Amino acid sequence: MMKKLKKIPKFKTENEERKFWTKADSTEYVDWAKAKRINFSNLKPSTKTISIRLPEHLIDGLKMLANKRDVPYQSLIKIILNERIDQELRNRI
Image (cartoon, rainbow, N blue to C red):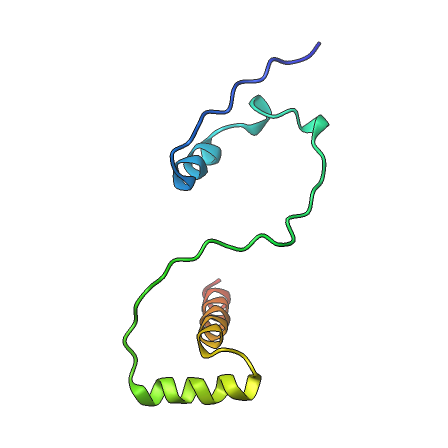
């Protein structure tokens, strides 16, 4: 006997949907037996633009390091921040 699935509600924002799925049982909404595996290889994470004031000597140093690594300096900032955040989180566990 096939279980009747609930209708997935419409969401106004991604955050609203995220909150819904943290509490909802997906098996009440999705027949996982019919699911197919797919690849989202070109999916990029959501980004948010921020403004940050840095001393000029710090920016100059970042640009020199970025040039040595042959990456844009803003990308290098993201790399460095990500590495440091990972390190801090590992050290706290």
